[in-house]
Figure 1 (cartoon, rainbow, N blue to C red):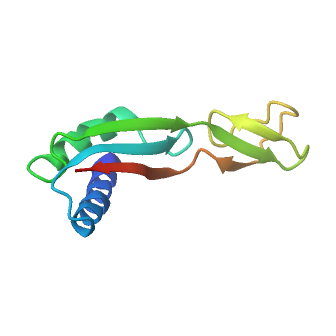
Figure 2 (cartoon, rainbow, N blue to C red):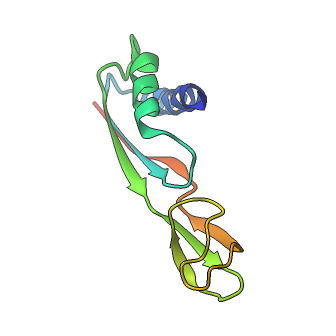
Length: 113
């Protein structure tokens, strides 16, 4: 389950930010998770609850914003929506679609007190 190592990395970043800002507590963390990122949001939520126990982010709300997949088809030069990596272009049927969005995972917002 790679979500545990992702949750640990997120909490490390959040705790570093909270310390730098002299925060007493973290109340909210907003994550953007791309549809093509191979991250399972519910597994990440579970891991988040585990790694925040006893720390400055214990009890913090986790909001996950889904980022849709997008790609560029090389043969027809169309920008298309993608629901899976290596899927076919909905315009021409080619499998030569380069992902251009939806592969990322990032911390978008941290609310501290």
